[in-house]
Length: 171
Image 1: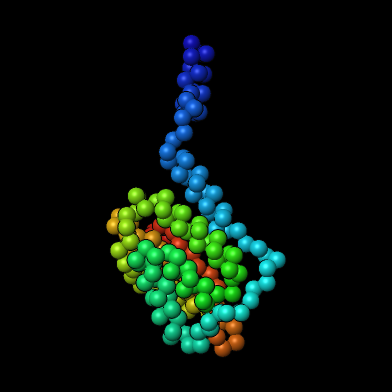
Image 2: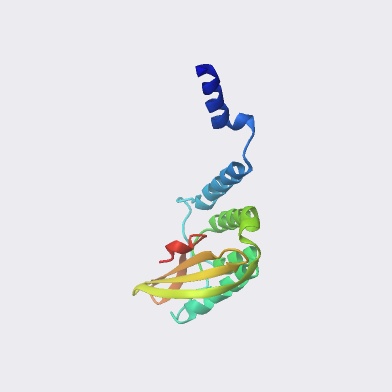
């Protein structure tokens, strides 16, 4: 009896050698997340080719332009637009784009097609840091997009951007 119980427990734990579709998707998402988080700290941040935003009032327009691409499901277009306003190396932005596109492709059945976007709010964190929160509206569930702009001297640059499906954590 003990051997049979042990066999059943082992079979349940191992899934009888079959790979669960959800665990395969989760593994792929984790690998993709690692790609997104890959940073080359030896690469110098440069402002070569960066379009600076001089007026804080223009930052919302910049985010709206980025989100207009996201709202249509054009993630590549959104990342091309973001590239204009950041010091991040092109290689990091390209990795972030590939990881984002892969994650969206894997989860599209769950969230559904993009159906536009919605501004949630902006927050002046300090005199040199502004945060914007948006929803990318999908058929079944929204995605939260966050942008943070940093002011150095008289100009603003896109310093941080993230997205996730954690609507309960909108802050």
